Image (cartoon, rainbow, N blue to C red; front, side, top):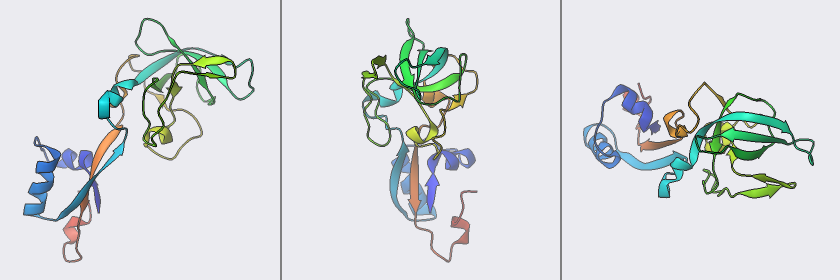
Length: 177
């Protein structure tokens, strides 16, 4: 059984390390076969490149029918220009943004690049791009949040998952609750 550590900590307070938690569970109740990490890696400070943004401008891309040009406030002195293919948001929307240098869960490293003659200095994110679901029909529109807020403070971008050996004689180990 896969047990997200964030879910487990909703029910059981734990201040120790993840390895300590796995050891304590193995001794007390069930064998832990391993630990998986899901979502955005924090290796090299990667999580710091994922931020909350507010869309200041959104217009049709002059050289592409299915793209729009946006200016997004990500808490820096100047807004970022970002080319986006989604149309489910407008000016004033609070969105999830990955800045150049960020590495997505699929291993893609974002770079500042030119898209059809316009600079894209980041990416406005859909839920599947950060491992939060399978939806890619549009970008995530977030509740009102201060631009520049670390996205990990708003969304569960990263989680560890315990792989629990749940044998048939322990039905109590077939669920988190």
